[in-house]
Image (cartoon, rainbow, N blue to C red; front, top):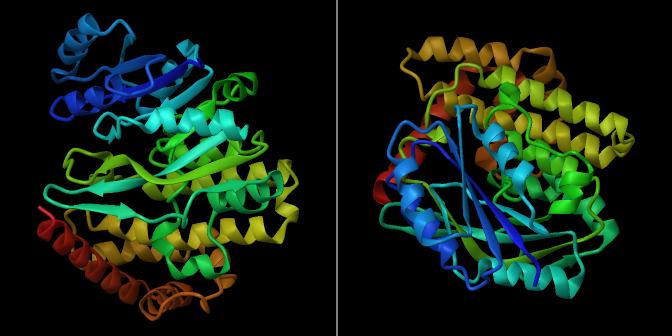
Length: 356
């Protein structure tokens, strides 16, 4: 029976941690090592871990100084001895049959990666995120030309749903082959690209994937009501961090000759363009006047990286509302772009309020 290492980075999640741990210790698949990395959490997380580890000897607890999500995951990778590795965020949880289903698929179908769907969990509402229709096994060619490319960015008709840009780019929701991670010295990069570590890790990992499988079940539960989540706080260096990510991805494509592929090149270009949504929303996470936000958005839109990206953006596949938004971006109209982002922010806030 193959062993699975479950790596859980933990920071300031005391109110969510028990539900996460219960979902892991209660897995129907029992051959687990549950590696909990306390990343210098200032709350009661350490005490919760102590209580759980006293009851379940599969739990391995690592205490370290705060170093961020990447650092915590890397510490987990160092001590992992499982045949497979699963990453779980400490404020999320899994269905009890998740790991058993993933290992069964990996062994039966002989794949290097198993992926599955997820449900977005609001306070009083659950919304399943649709990724692919039905279970799918991707051949070596399909894994490279479609799945790997999709990690890089969307293409063609996929742009009709720009919100799907990172639907398969997360580190959670996957069963990794531990040997491929360790043999190729793969790790999560540091805070230079905080918030997008998963994208780069999967970009690298898929260099060594022969084939993969997607299970069309929403096994992961992605919490959307955590007000302390990094995704809900203003990040002053986000533009610089994402620009560094794109430089690293571009360097990767060039070194692996993938940049010779028009699809990979266009996919990365599209990722850069679509990131204006996240960058704009980030501006609305800080207290600032409209024109202050518009000035920052103008700096982004007129930076060489984004000017070049938008020059090559094909608008034909976007639905009308997104086509209008990205046309403003393409024109470099910061005021109009900022206005639309403000509307998007209000819609998101309204949806979140009705989901509470």
